[in-house]
Figure 1 (tube, helix red, strand yellow):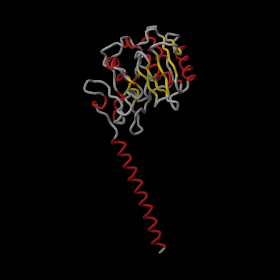
Figure 2 (cartoon, rainbow, N blue to C red):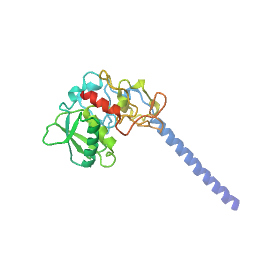
Figure 3 (tube, one colour):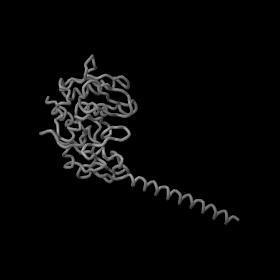
Figure 4 (cartoon, one colour):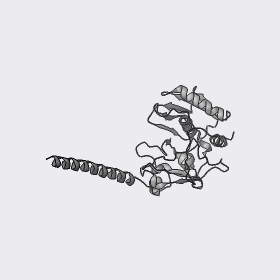
Length: 260
């Protein structure tokens, strides 16, 4: 009887081990089944980027207008979407106003007052910051009130606040530049196939635009939208990319855009 009980216990342990192996195999197979991108997953038949079907956001954190689509295709200069007075009024209706004030004061100082951020005092064109779902912004000035979401839980680092306001100034993500393939490698096989649209590439860049910046605050990280934990973006030599704080090249690009 003792031997029978021992054999029965061993059989149960083997069954549990086999179950874990099968479960792990299924999970790995499921993860890899979600990997890989094709061109049709990135843009539509007109060459325009696809939005996230659930959030309506482009590249994770941007809301785009028809003017932005023309810019992405290289059919129109971004100048029409700029804050022409170089003054950006804003209001914070929910979230952390003092954190926004502090991050923008730092950004304005780094820009040597090329751009001035100020609390709104009746201006018709302004940014309304609220604590919505996630972190997102429109790109450039849209006219009238334009919203920006900075969720209270997760969007209030200095780098994140500045990232979203730089979108509002008119800049897209660094890794979507038209010349990105000369500087970084996109590892398409490691990207979640529901997130392929986040790796769209622009049609052109303004002439004389500052150099590519691997650690820009506007650059995706190395494992952005990974389906398997592996790298999705690296330098051409395999190094990591992405930054969490403003760089000198970020400053140079804003100043080039606003010619100041």
